[in-house]
Image (spheres, one colour):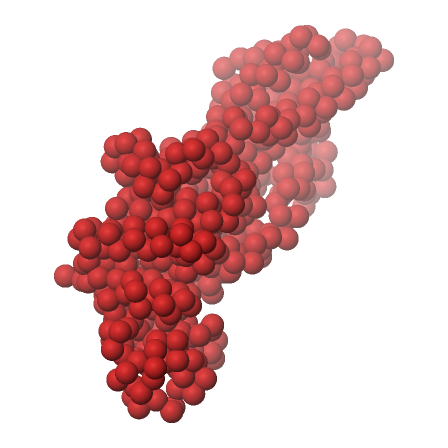
Length: 245
Length: 267
């Protein structure tokens, strides 16, 4: 059973189609990249999977649980981190993790908080207010929160955007390790194509709300006569009709 | 059990904030203390001028304290939500398994704790400075406080529903909600003083039942339990209606994408 199953998902804003009946799935242990230019519908898709945006049609199932039918149970099996969703700056790192740990119903919470603090090298900042941390450190706190409940589905929207190369590498390793450990699947958005190529098992190219391409990030560019993933991305963004789809 | 944990999370978060920022205590006590000092001296002056046949202290100062408790319950319910607005936390909160009623019960629990602290503190203050004890109202004080708290919480939920629907600038609607209703509540005068249309509005508001009941208790030493029961029933009805209102505002926000934009754009 896939950890995420999206069927004919659609979102319209008045007359504008934001997401146009897309279907895809993410399997356990799989890292799937959701790529596309700004305005392609990535954030709308992620928002619908997170239950904060109501689809105009279609369905989202997380670990076999229909989000529309049992939102709470479905969301307890997921978690996310995004550059635009930093944790409250007026709470310390520990307080944030305690707060979200309770919301997600994490068992043996204190032990788990200790584990994620160690994993993301945040022990020194345990009692520091999140708002006082550097952007890179805040990103790590967001990732620690995202891993707190060992989610079946981990949603990451540009998780390494504000990290230095070393921090980004560590983060990529942590997430790959998480997926390979069979804990769950990952849906990852990024504009860093080298990163996507290194981390993702499969990519979905989204443009104007539709999935235009899907495949292995290492072979997909060649299949469409492009040098690399970045060139393919640019082609999807600028001249999707020129692609042989 | 998970439901209780999530409610506790909302409560605990607010306690963390109180603990880390003592200035938050100021907003709990400052206005209510100013009100008591002001009305304490006004009632003292009235008592000395008019004579001791009518107790202004019991009717006016007692009413002011009760009204401030309602305001405290109103603001206490809204504050945790405003914390989420100010810290742009909607995306994080609403993508967790928390259910809407748990979120609101968390607010009410937080408000109950802070309101209880305020009741104890201001009661001691009024006794010490003006020799007036709120507890002189006897057993009727309990239903009075329950009615006012429930209605204050309902007003708080109405306020946050408006903010959710119309965005952070709608905070302007939230803060004066209780003050706008005060002329109808009969805090300082009997409802019969008001013109007919205002009386009709008054009897649709639970605080009117409390303040009429309080005056009846002070002046004739009688508790009208029917009035108290009506006030309690109305408070429960308002709480239910405001929950439904908030749920509707939430549905609109989720349908239109407001929740996602709230975090992205902020106040």
